Amino acid sequence: MCNPKTSNVATTTQRPSFRAQLSMRSQQQKLQSVVLDSATALYVIHYLYNNPSWLNPWKIASAQLWIAGFIFIRCAIVFYDHLVVAMIEKLFKCKVLPTREPGAPPVRYVSLDLRSVVYLSINSLNEYAFVMRLTHYLWHGGHQQLVPWKMEEISVSNTIVALGIMLVSMDLLYAPLHHFLHLPSMYPLIHKHHHRQHYPVRGYLDAGNEHPIEHMIGVVCTWFAVLTAEMLLPSCRIWLSGSAHSPDFVTTGGGVHAVTVLIFFNLHAALAMLNHSPYNVNFSMPFIGSSNLFGKDNKLIRLIESVPLIGKRIVRLATGQWFMYSVGHHEMHHRKFNFNYGQYCMLYDLLMGTFIEYEGPKRASQIAAERNKLKDG
Image 1 (cartoon, rainbow, N blue to C red):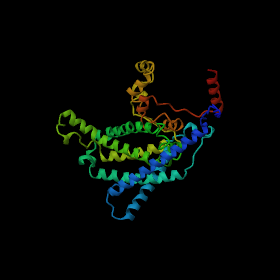
Image 2 (image 1 turned 30 degrees about the vertical axis):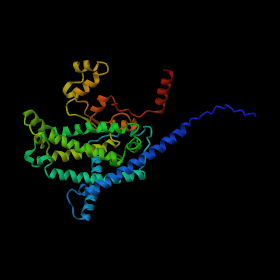
Image 3 (image 1 turned 180 degrees about the vertical axis):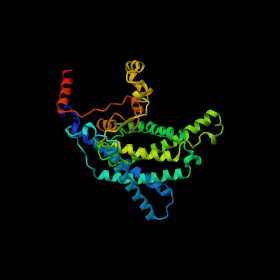
Image 4 (image 1 turned 90 degrees about the vertical axis):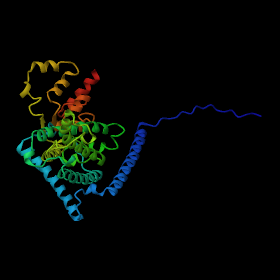
């Protein structure tokens, strides 16, 4: 009996095409996004059900009054946004960034889509809750009820120094968390939506157009800044004096004046709006890091700068040039995603090597010349 011959035909497995791989990856990201958003929404609903005071720390009895407060805050934000723009244009005479100047190559602006409107709506509730909780916290004296309100209690340490501590400490927490949101596994789930606009122009609408998780991260960073300024200097005094012998005296409050916190909150809001505007606004730490203190041709500074790799970083850190607020820096972050993670100061980016200077618009001829140079090289 003859056995049939078995054919040894090699079966080759075809790899999916690049387009198919992109489609699969996109479907996976959509599924992950749905799971993350659903889990977050369920947690928030569960938390608010068990902690209704989070949305109403002042215990406003009337729903109409609560809604009226919400409308008032929204109108105040719109007014403040326009006020900041008017001051920048009329008072400070700031020009627009080079990429927005007449004659520059046109840039692409993205309109607000449905997701953007939903995110802005959710974040507006979070902002309202934050404003109520912050004012309630200050009204009741903050940590250990030591936050001063009286004008005669104002000092250099609880105003100027505390304001600097809040600005720097906020960025020291925000920048690494911002960097974390740019990790490949996290970026498409949360932060990608905020980067739809490569050239921010709408102020608050572009600043607040972010995933609610990202918005909550910003709120946490703001609280961190307030608590750091409130407790850092007084707690340091306790530690240095040797009084921290009991767990009850490890930290103490009173390091920031209530008026300073309100100034910080308004300054923070204004700078966040400007970071997403077309205006060329720049400032650095007063005096420190400028030619007023060291001079443009200081021999020691120039000698340190000449040290390879680390010279310029040392000079920037030592002279205070790491505190450089620039709308252009944040525009570069929107244009080149993996740089300039800080908001106000560039300390984190200088340390991590992710800082880049502002680059003006490039003509088509310049881009072609750079490509040809790369090919020739």
